[in-house]
Image (cartoon, rainbow, N blue to C red; front, side):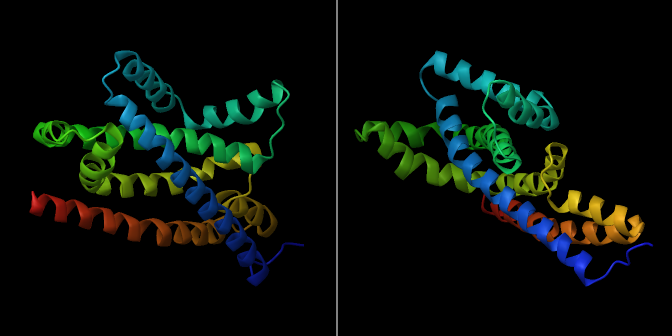
Length: 216
């Protein structure tokens, strides 16, 4: 007997949505902190540090996110480190996000007029103060449209977490679809939920980009 798609099934999709949002927030926050360090290291005076960050970014941007999830979840298991699925996907998405956000913010830092950094240096400001008070506030403003745009990609990318058993929105949709035998209805609802999350962010990103272009 087929299960009819009803409130119980919709509530299960909302549970998956909760984990999608939570994973996106963790990955964006953790990736943002690490990405800031990556961006600063990419623009450092040390050539060795810059090359190390270039390699780091190349690895995470040049390999599929699906493979990164496998490596973190199963690779750490082979080393005797057993992680629950939610922890493994959070680590993988955080590392991936740090590479992309770090490169976005590196570009924003280097887009600043050189005179900004030279003036801060001439005033005798230490490195931390130059970054905190002069460089990063301006760079992060420039990077806002691309950062919000990446957040949209991150939300949609969380659907790959199902590969290691993490039940987020897309995986919840698969489970409900297999119970109700109504894939068009179920994934139509899933798609509408994703759209309600991503479309406002896309509009906000476009608005920020237009505002920045007008100001420039």
